[in-house]
Length: 314
Image 1 (cartoon, one colour):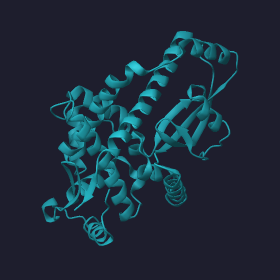
Image 2: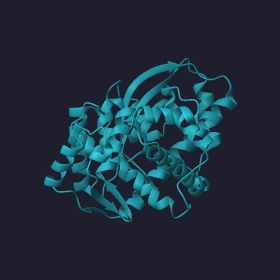
Image 3: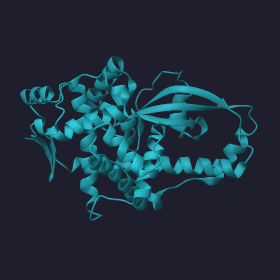
Image 4: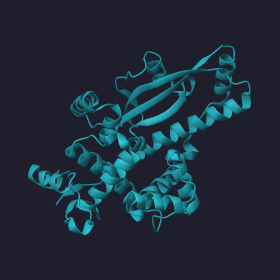
């Protein structure tokens, strides 16, 4: 894998500085990278930075160099998935109702309630509608591919879950955690030491969420690593053991997982009373465990594809 040289990066950062041209035609469009038959241009970087700033306001205070790296990594994740998806589908497109459902789920705070309002929201923020739509199409088709390929391999002990819930029902209160993650993979110990040192350095300098945007291989990278509220007893044994020792705003050392290493941060904690509806609670845990395993399969599959592709700077 090859990387852009320092002079080339300097030129790009100047082009993509805060002096963005109001007319895109005024920005010289150069090919920066090539991934198989997919290319990444200055316009792609420009559009991705705009998208990230609108949907991830926390990155606005990052340096241009950091914005460039985050934007490049975000585009590469999409390109890698797109290359693989085109082995299974003729075009990257889905039914509008699925697109709207995803947008509502991911960005409920925008108040979008129709495809028309979604497109207007993008246009009002000077975002390219087709580019943004393709990003969401890729996510939807990728999730469907992972489900179709790996759903038969999912293994969950329902009886064990039932027993755990019955045990919890005897407690007066349980913990629910708001957690974020950074997932990264390595090739050897030296690679681990290098990546981990850089991640820790960036967490200290720019915060956990921005470091997740910059370094995490997970799909949650686009939301600063935020997973959301999770009942602590739903976490797997290794992660639960670690989170039980963390205070709010603390993060863990890397935890080995089937898809690499994961760093967990506790954003907030609240207590809740055990559910009295046993079947409802069982179904909720089953859903969580299923999504957890699918996410692990997704990360493993993505890492496998990525290793077989080569990135060139031009």
